[in-house]
Length: 204
Length: 204
DNA sequence: CTTTTTACTGAACACTGTTTATTTTTGCAG
DNA sequence: CTGCAAAAATAAACAGTGTTCAGTAAAAAG
Image (cartoon, rainbow over all chains, first blue to last red; front, side, top):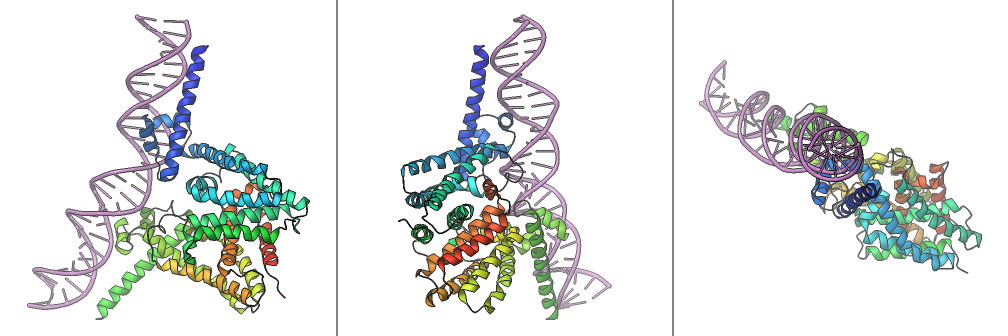
């Protein structure tokens, strides 16, 4: 039975190799500009082989999205040490901005890219996105429960924060912020994060 | 000299025809999925002809963006009749949401699509985007001047509002809002608009 | 050593944006 | 009306895309 195991391990290794190289290429060149042939050339296999491990390019994207979400979740981990929910919320915003501006391509893969999403309902990377949102929602829930805000609608409050963050990041990354003719774009984003927290939450 | 004029008019007519059909196709099928050959087939000319009127596909996108911005600006026109800046701001948010959710493809063309933007610095559609942002900024400026808010940073406040709106719209349109498992997604967006205005502005 | 199973290949298909040599159409002078 | 130059439109070509599938090579089993 050892042979079968080895074979299985080898298959898994190739699967991982494809994922690793595809991830790197998606991040470096973007999803659209990374062709299956280029990936194949990089891993030194023929195009067809990739299709033995991933149904199509979308399937490969899902896998890469999983990697991206894991990466993001790791950034968020230190947050759990912060006791005060308002403080945690503020730090969460800072991390969100930091990660998104440092890794605009990861961000794109997770939150902007269109292609699949619509079609598929159930997918692993999808659950990871939910997991990420729950980190926010839980913290907001604590803020509400502990009366650090006048607001009561946890969904609305959570989504507002997420939207503002997501909006800032995408307008920045897609260069639409340029219409504002600012000198320090990233500085403004951080300022707004603080501004929002202080307006909606009272940390006493 | 009449002949030259007619020729020029005919050229302009074809230019407009290409723009019109391209706009329709971009909106219906999306930018990526609309090929130059398909546009050519639709207007019953060969592919090459399009390149005599628009340098390339990006150039065509710019033109369509112009159409989209005009469309959006038209939606915003009725706003100017609202005297009270806070009321105007709130209505602006409602219109923004309404337009963006009704015309997700126009929205994509204006605010999400990547391709050109980065390369070109000066472009007509760009100015129209600026014009649109100034409608918001002017209103926020009035709110600040007339002391309807404690905030003083007009840029920050304006951009925060825009970001929140843009974030909500894109998360909705790209289906990322689904992780929230809501029943009435659009209702929540409108609720948040009101929530933001009432938290940052005091209309007395 | 043969058979069967598994893994892999590369050519083919129907597309894409863009360029260019060629052909067609047009306007005008003789 | 004819000849000709200029303008406009075309078809073919180039290099690329995602995806499929008949065929081949390698490995495992008998």
